[in-house]
Length: 317
Image (tube, rainbow, N blue to C red; front, side, top):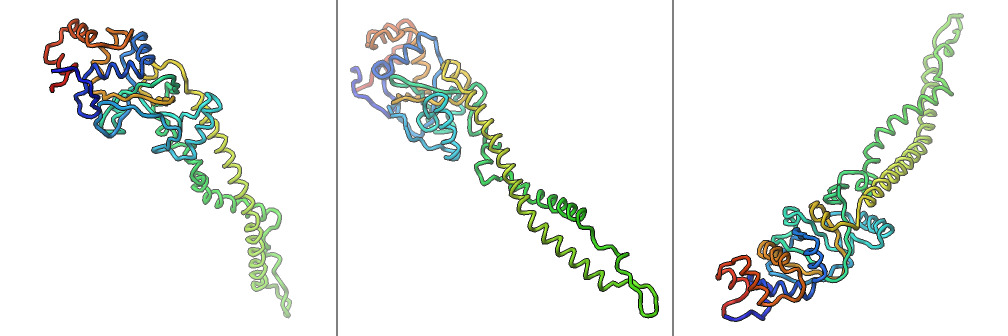
């Protein structure tokens, strides 16, 4: 047997020593923070794939998976005004929740930022899209769907109001005004003249209502749009204000969505390495680059069996 020097990214047999040295070389600032803060929870991300670990750049042009692009862009604009960066498009989305992260891929990875990083999270928002999907923020971006739903009822009521207004100013022809005297001096009701007057009144009234209804509908639409825009702006502002760039440990423990920004990150397969990294990290404290001797001492302290030690530190030739 020999110490494995070849970095195997996909076999599921990458030695723990290789993983620990990788995390020291690329992520030691973050690992030292975890050790010093006694953090035992990890930022997680679900991915399709089988590599034991990999390094990726954090995208600066992320496209939202579910949220409409225009809403995501609007949130980005508001986040940038408040926090100085665009987390919706310039981050990787992570969470402390195993179940939530697993929904996005068949392999669960721990995410370790490389170098300087930033993050945003909200203590009362587990997933921003789920939070706004059925509310006015979403509806206001889809052709004022809520307004269109109510427009028909509003038009029906508005026509009734306009007809009543017209009737107050221009009463319908009164039957009493259509009695005449015939040649014999008898009084009779001139039904033909009355019907003609009624038809003329109805046509004039309907013509006036048709001319006015457009103004009423336009005013209604404008007022409702303003109401929805104001309501949406207030909701979005409250949402953005609920986010914090402090207390990453609490963010991870919350199991809520975390937007992690920076340049790069290292991803390590969770199910195989999480408990081992946790145990070694809190024993070792990342004082220097881990060596075989460090791992042997740690294994002895933990009283690991020989077969486990070999599997974690060495590969068979």
